[in-house]
Length: 76
Image 1 (cartoon, rainbow, N blue to C red):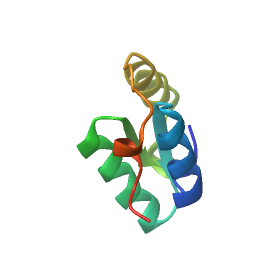
Image 2: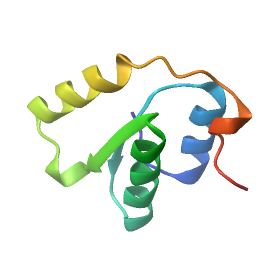
Image 3: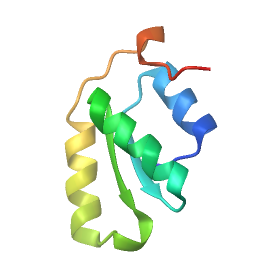
């Protein structure tokens, strides 16, 4: 779980770690959408997060087995 910055996202993707973005800026939402598209994580606005949504999202992303590898790394 992190804020959705590109550096944090890239490091987690290289490591094959499931990700949950709690976005605070527009670019963080864009990265969250890419994680969802790749089926390697999820995200939502930090301001919209509730205890219930946080627990549900964490359970969902932690249930996935995400292999590490360059095919999961974002461009750049």
